[in-house]
Amino acid sequence: MLQKKLNALLANYEVMFHKLQTYHWYVGGATFYVDHEKLELFFEQALQNVDLIAEKILMLGGKPLATMRDMLDQATIGEASDQDVSQEAAFQSVRDDFKVLLADVVDLKKLADDEDNYLISAFADTLIEQLYKDLWMLGQVLA
Image (cartoon, rainbow, N blue to C red):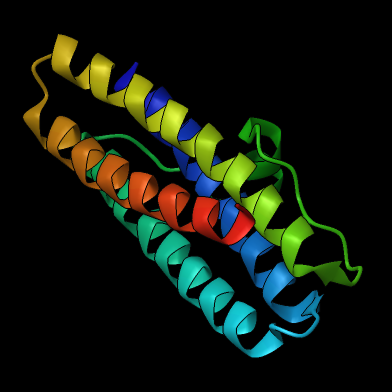
């Protein structure tokens, strides 16, 4: 069950990575330079998490999803379109998706704790802290 939850989280982070990269390319407006840079930090963080999640699946003896088709089939986060996007629309979408990721990770942590899997529980703690900080920062921008 942990491997299945990890693969679902992997799929959401993979789609999130591509969405953040798309917003990085298409965001515009008066705060472009700052927004462009922040979105780049977010997508680099998402890509790092993709790798860390896949490694956790492998450590548990499982197989991480590997194709984009499988990722898209599993993901509950949607893709971004190749359209210009305002700062507000991009960051609102990112905040909404980070809330989805947070809920996924909290569910993963509960399952890991129930199974006494300290590796995954501790990893989930790290992701939870990261997402709470990102959500707080996005909330400041969107206030």
